[in-house]
Amino acid sequence: DAGVIQSPRHEVTEMGQEVTLRCKPISGHNSLFWYRQTMMRGLELLIYFNNNVPIDDSGMPEDRFSAKMPNASFSTLKIQPSEPRDSAVYFCASSFGGSNIQYFGAGTRLSVL
Amino acid sequence: GQQVMQIPQYQHVQEGEDFTTYCNSSTTLSNIQWYKQRPGGHPVFLIQLVKSGEVKKQKRLTFQFGEAKKNSSLHITATQTTDVGTYFCAGNFGNEKLTFGTGTRLTIIP
Image (cartoon, rainbow over all chains, first blue to last red; front, side, top):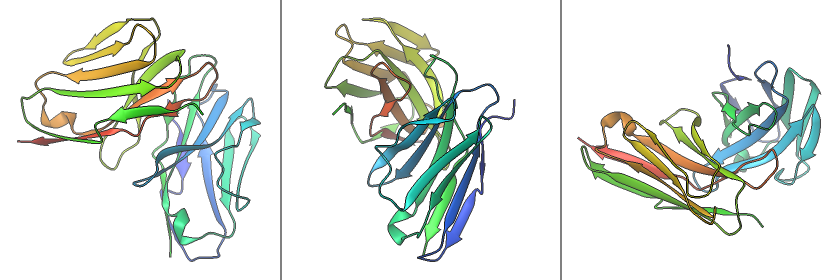
């Protein structure tokens, strides 16, 4: 089992640029979660999908952030335009059915200069 | 809103000492989970507690769920250097999502 796969692992970009983070959940899992982790704010849930449908996006900071899940095996988190305060580690996690147990990817470390 | 508070934020212990982290919710939980994140790593699921008053053990780790299902604790007996990391509780309030606590960062002094 390959686990949750995220890419890229590291991203360095300049303020104002568009950033796209990618996630492949574990095959068969039907819920997908995007988190942001910083020292100041800890682990924050940004958005989650169930069966490819966004269920709760109340954690998305602002309109600069958007997320899509076009199919069961792929999701993206896009930041446009990026700002230095977006610098953080972004995790994707997936879970199956009603178990609620979440399996995290290795994360994308984003630095916006 | 539904919040999960966790204390302490940091804990430094001598190797061989015990360690405990506590988690509290303002409202009743459906279940609670515990995760461990090694430095530079990602959160990894440890255990899930569902029943009121439940106690589960994993080797040197003991997990408890309060009678009112509003609090939980993780206790590590005789810490080892491999226990280093941040321990998160995560509360579930009856849907797919988890509300993570702020985490307790454990460092071990050899």
